[in-house]
Image (tube, rainbow, N blue to C red):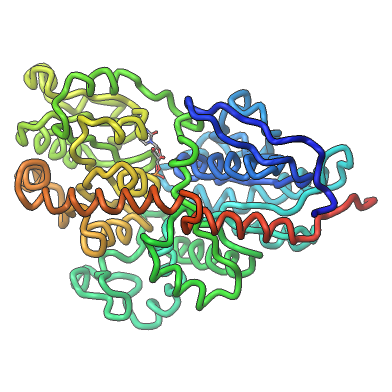
Length: 478
Ligand code: UDP
């Protein structure tokens, strides 16, 4: 038995109406550092909850930018660092510039905060740091403090495999991508096409490459990598990563099936989404959301609006303020657009997405294929219409349409006629029926992997053993 085992007995914690069994406290503390973006905060907080139920004390170090509300997590300790972004810098308009800057500005305040925590003898000793993989600066900080570091990669394993191949793809001439080659296959990485490779609109295109390579290098240098995925979904990518990396790989997802993400929402979720869905027929509604960062220009936004309207199907559409470049919110819509749809449409600024996808009225999810959204859709058995925007989203979408075959891609531009026909092919036609069957079978696998003896359950046990085998840092006099 581990020498830090505390005498507390098991207890239960209430979470969203389900009783969650909490193991005995094990006398070890974990320090978690999320990347402060919605798609990263959600899985890190879910992971914190999962590891808390396994007996660990949880300390979260967070930037002041985009911080979650600590009062929602009385069972965690929060420390906020001052990364001091200016108002212009604290914008997701150029996401790569923001993340690259955070990797610089967080170094000193994070190191100071972590050093203080390490010398605090009043708390359980720290077993390791769990950092978002994109915060690659933590490799050097944890090495300097001799603290073991495990990373959480919040994206999928298949897209990560592509990131690890970036230097090779550059050498082979696939990158930077050229307009004339976009439809070509990447023969070394089927079923990817050149247009599925990770690109982002950024002031400095080279910085995308640098960031992703630093992330994969920082992951290789860690003591292990945790994935919000499951073995049955991404077996071949996980096998390849196990082969290429000499570190343990822990696919313990889907996280949100254990802990819902609603509590870590940085925006207020509009509950009218659910009361509106309550009045709709089963599997009749298209839920449309492009996540927390992707943006459209006004022309694209209007094509989406008219494609949805012309499909004649009911739709629930998340138009986040900032979704349309240069607009506050819905002003680009023609006068009377919503009224003319006679209640067939509902638009909100932010939705309780997990509950929406679990609602029986939802028949399809038009998504940008952020990894969380993709996984949430799979777990609820909702077929997808894929419209990836940047980095891993293109690869996620290719896997959805061509490997798992649980969705259809909207490729090569946004046109209202194509949108209208894709929605009807998926919701009404027989083609959609086959896709629905396949995603229901994946949903079942996503459930089974979390049950006793299931792959993610076993992987979580291995993760816990691995952490407990790390030598905790005991107080060192400065
Ligand atoms: N989400 C939400 N309400 C919305 C849209 C999204 O709560 O109206 C949540 C969604 O459930 C997911 C996260 O925000 O957990 C978005 O993460 P994802 O990886 O899909 O995309 P990103 O925002 O990182 O591009």
